[in-house]
Length: 252
Image: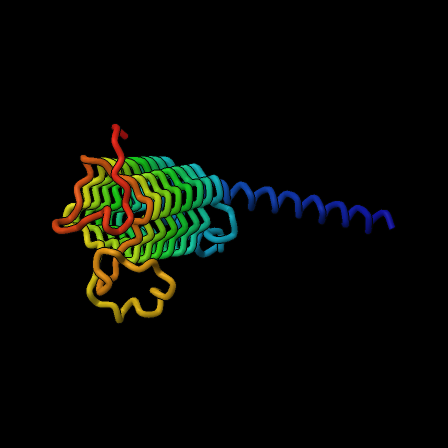
């Protein structure tokens, strides 16, 4: 009886040691993802993916400040509340990722894949999103002030209430994007695509979409209630007031 009790205690103790070692290994690997060495960070990201830690909440609140995760495959990652300030995610895959309430100030997401990513209420101040795929991404209420979005694909993206003051959107694709109540003071939308004559490819998603007052034959971004000022630069022959945008005075 005593021997059985001893063996049971020894087994429980060993399990506790194993669990402690496994937890420490996980912490070390996640810390390794924050490395400034791309090879080192990518190896950690590969392990995180293989272990199933991308989506299970292990990366919630992770500190990946200045991490070099260029070309990383982080599809579907749960990065809620993570700190990604000044990190390099150029060319990375973050499609379907959850980045709600994360901090992405000064992050490099150039040419990254953020298809259907959730960035609601995320701080993305002065971020580089040039050429990024943000198709159908949720950016509702996001802070995108001074963000570089030149050439980004924002088709169908939800930017409702987003702060885009002084953002650079030259050449961005914004067809079917929801910019209702967004702040666009000082933003540069020169040569941005806000309309598309091809209605067929949007036939299923346009049901219930607000009708355009500018041209009923064009699919257009929803700018109802969006604010802009005299510094906002619009594409040639585009009339924001005609689609519900509001001209405001003052510096923003």
